[in-house]
Length: 259
Image (cartoon, rainbow, N blue to C red):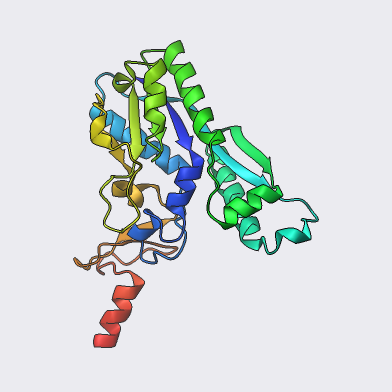
């Protein structure tokens, strides 16, 4: 069974940020989560293989959408300090480049010229990115109509997209698979949008990505902390000896201090 993957890169980037949903599963939540896009695709293949009926899924097309601010060489002095915007844009660019390197199309990476009104809205946290949402919906609807038998995996937490998809593709719940984070998160502020998952009767249950962070985090040696009260995921450049219980650094430091 073939399937396409559509990534709301702006949403995914946010979840990978410091103290984001994926970072909160790691040993240092205040450090950005390093996502391996090739491994992420493998996770989806494995999950669909467990759910789908037939000879097994094969990825057909990979779409990645995000917007990156293009900052002029000489910004307007009236904008004030925009270093935080520059750092965010550079991080988004690296994130998008890593997706493209893994085989995702770059057609949905939008360079948005930074303007004064944008700076003001970003500073007040009033900026709402709509270009990415509409582009993801448009591409998914186009492909769903063109090939009604193919599955379409949507990686997003913006469930406001679904009513728009439903308007054009009434039977979308039979071919769309949602890869997202669970709406009931432990940390405050990590919930989903107003459209909750249980409102949509998908044929395929949503894939909750935070349950698979150890499978798509970037790194050579990935472990889960053996402290039952922790269970955080961590990565090491060298393998931990097989006879040793893997402990994340905070738990190991606490054990040493208590010894």
